[in-house]
Length: 110
Length: 117
Image (cartoon, rainbow over all chains, first blue to last red; front, side):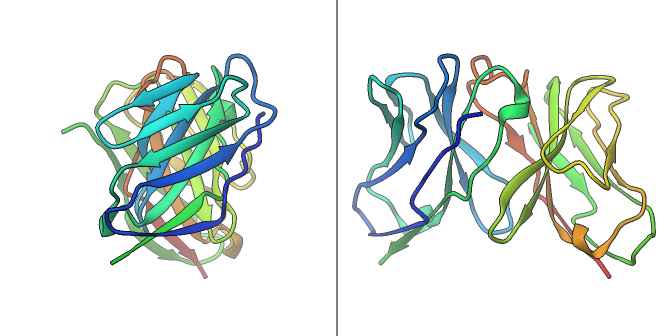
């Protein structure tokens, strides 16, 4: 089971790009990297998933270097509504490995 | 609308009084799971189910039971609740439970806040 390490908290200002990095040194060959967003008292919501290089969707980009020992979630031009906890998960075929860490509390300031 | 529903959303009960939290999904997902979330401990998996009649323990299964008799429902049962089960509970589902196939991850319910006195 790949353990993940993220910063506990980050602050940013509206309109800035935010990059949250997750470390997963013992990632396995079959593991995928998934990021979730959680607002207070709500369930987590899927943001993006990747295996290698770069993945982009309508809300975020995910950068994964060649060694895959880390990944970076990039949120372009954040707004106040992006204030939330962001979780990085690493797992493969077994749902048993879907373990959430403590996440990163992102606070977007006006 | 595709969704995961949980009932009740809020529940206050007393020690030892059996309770069931229901979870239902309308997306025909094979995989369903229960998590509890506590301050400073993040989300911890209680039980999961890969399909009907197939369930397995997560990280913190003690004091909980589950059943999966139908694909859409995955109730969480606390036979004899104790105060240390006071928590925020989330049910989740995904098409298969396998990351390489579930490219949209898990869908989570709105949560059930349980207080055991």
